[in-house]
Amino acid sequence: MLEQTKKNNILKVIYKLTNDLLFLILLLFGFILLTDGILPGLATRYVAYLDLTLILSLILGIIFWIGGKIKKNNPIEIKNSQKLFFILTFVSMVLIFLSLFKFSLITALIIFILSIIMGYLIYKLFYSDIV
Image 1: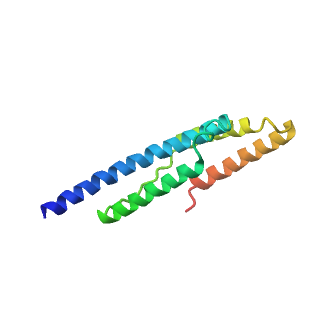
Image 2 (image 1 turned 180 degrees about the vertical axis):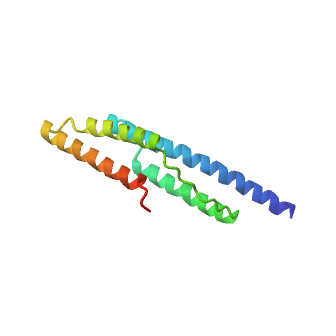
Image 3 (image 1 turned 45 degrees about the vertical axis):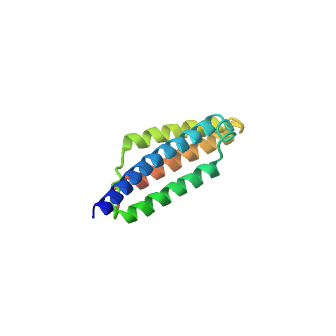
């Protein structure tokens, strides 16, 4: 009985550590995407997206496997945060604007206006009261 409790506690520690590692890898992935959006080729010269994706898949597999062994079943509550949405929208618009320098002015304006319209439609999709 004591051996089973000790093994279960070790699995819980590994489960929590892999969750923290998943968070850190996701932050790294987002930082690399942001860096590559601002200065293309700066981050991907050293780290490939495929490597990070495989590492993320491996970590998720470990989390699900250990979570099944310790019977961890927490439903995730997703909170809609309008402040976060507007921050992400601003960052996305800056990245889109920076990527449009090589286009002509008319083409860049059309793409930018269509991106704003798509962002508005996505906002209405996520924050509408229709169920």
